[in-house]
Image 1 (tube, rainbow, N blue to C red):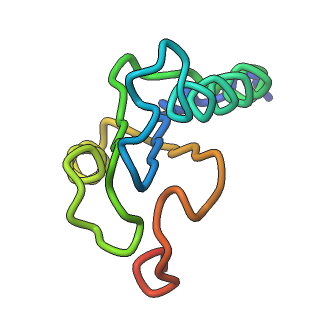
Image 2: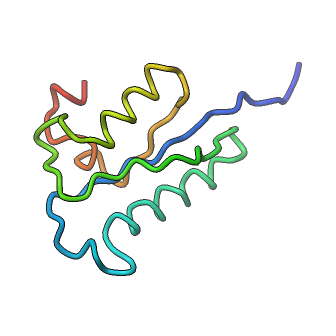
Amino acid sequence: MTNERKRLRCAVYTRVSTDHGLEQEFNSLDAQREAAKAYIKSQAHEGWSLVRESFDDGGFSGGSLERPALQLLLAAIRARHIDVVVVYKVDRLTRSLADFA
């Protein structure tokens, strides 16, 4: 029996509804990303590793899937480049249970 774990490629998705404060050196998207990256790092023993690409939607509502970074993320998932998506809170991904499902 082997102890090798499958490598899981993890992407971080961040979103805020308004662009207020995004010009700051450290903003809400940065805080969400840092928390998610720390979680991925804590799961390294399970084979989790962070992909290089960032998926950040600043100034977009969670009520619609029509967000540029989310569309790129979904395309990367369909292309099997990403195994795990990490978000700060589920509502950062979507506000719709139907879309989440």
